[in-house]
Image 1: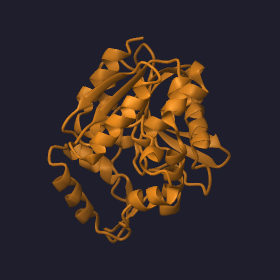
Image 2 (image 1 turned 120 degrees about the vertical axis):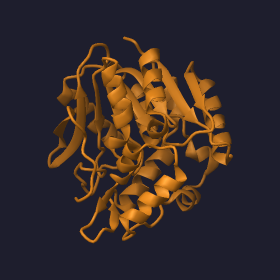
Image 3 (image 1 turned 30 degrees about the vertical axis):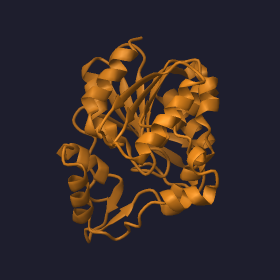
Length: 287
């Protein structure tokens, strides 16, 4: 477990058991008033990527925490439970352990779709839903056949790559990111004693979560979500930008949603623009 970024001064690290033998790491920035915010990362990511957003929300007086989902980061990595129903139950158990009756659920990418599902499944626990370049993804609209989606979105094989090589790639791809943002992204990997990396999320588990995302129909859950919904979306000016705008249009057709676009912008908006994302959450949800 070498080379991982720590949660930072003043942040409490909890170990929350969500199932017998399965504990999740939760980073807790602590206190304020109003509805607390639980931050949920995307596929193959980790809670530290929310540090900039969480720190800003905390400075604005919000209670805020972020979770490493099962199989990710410093959470346990069981062989099963990589479906939306189980991961959603994990998130609710985290709310219970934190003593939060209702919370704003902010999810990035796949995490956005996951919290949209919770908005429909457990509305009494959800004060608001925020999708950060996520929440409206409907992969079946682009890939009606699962095998086509799997072939297009399978993760790259980074096993054994030198950590310095991966960090260099991240810096070149995202020259405007802070050092903290690069380090938080590197926390997606275990750095071995020889300096090579291996993803915390094993490839087969990655594909099971991708399948769960492919199976998710966000418009169905959005139609049954009574809480306010904010989508904070990134458009890099590429083909994915057109796809995301079509997904958002489909979501808007089923219910009112507050949508804010950043363009051009990275998929990891919470890393690229943490203060702006945090301020949108704070400004829109003031309860």
